[in-house]
Image (cartoon, rainbow, N blue to C red; front, side, top):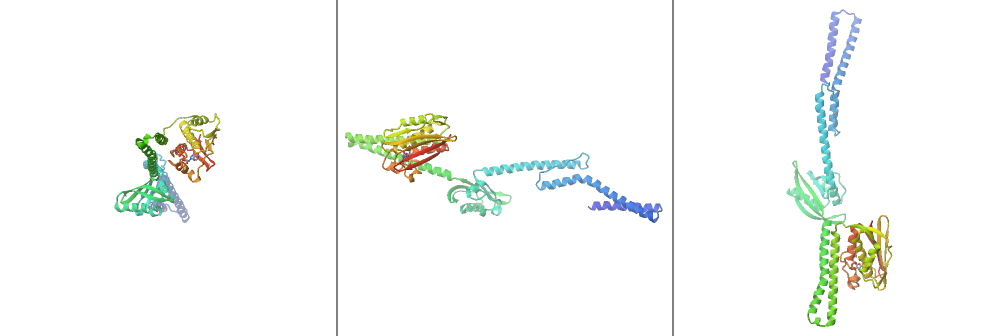
Length: 446
Ligand code: ADP
């Protein structure tokens, strides 16, 4: 600005000096002097205007460059300036354009990395929280929000506003106080449900600030599965023990004096044979269940359901009941033969086993475009309402079946059916009335 005022002052001074010299050299009248002053004034103004015009033309590129720099610092995409080779700033502009393209490239890489980091953080199956200076959280992923049962917060946020679990806050504070990583398994109540989390904390330094990274891993399902396996083992051992004790007991008795009596021997040997049969049924059901869980892809084929029903009926003693197979011989679906056979076998066995003498069994099947259904109804003893939700549990046997020994069984038949149906994302419906009968329908997707 100062430079500009200097230049304008010199133009005016030069013009006044020229005017002074002219009036000294040529004698002019008063009127002519006025005209000369006006002419010199107009000329001086024109010179100033021309100077400005010339300077603006030269600095236009610099002004654009300056504006682009301001825009870049404000976060806009860096843009270059068109540099004419004739421009006095050509080299400067070329350098500027290179710098802008470098910044553009760096911004692109940084954005990509931020995106990758955020996608990774959001999709991690582990809850991640970073607590920085003054207990402000600056990283909090969706998994952490889900696990702690809170809304996804806007970070930064004070940790006490999000982490309302006392034991978890304690671990974070302990990490800050000891500068040592911590590890613990916490039992937390989340939305009224007890959940178990593996919590690891990591003490780290960011510049001169101490920070704590928290990682949460949900163990609830894993621990539940472990408990289920332990229960299964305990139940299975118990179920094995009963027939084994009976077998060893009766065999020992037979080895003694009681074995000499023909009638006792026949009676005891029958018990031993029955218990051995029960053991064998248990082993085969447990094997079936285990095969279900570790099944490799099996072949899908076209299955004639009526024929499968007939095959399974041949394996069951149906002398005391009348069976109506109402499935059309040409009713077919595509599926895994062994799975469908196992379902049919277990449903039919139960409908005969838990029936009355001279009772009846009806079997039917339906399908639409999405799914198919097999329905087995019987006129048997029925299942009390309070037992209906439990009959699919492993080793569960209805009170009637267990106490009065209506029929032999392992308590695994419907658990196996349930396992197969779950694997195929199917469903099971049950309708039953004590003393009237039971209908169990299995629905499988096509
Ligand atoms: P199991 O028949 O070996 O006892 P399941 O798993 O097949 O084991 O069945 C579990 C229980 O469900 C049976 O003990 C019985 O009490 C009940 N149940 C199953 N099917 C029927 C049925 N059709 N009628 C009456 N009760 C049934």
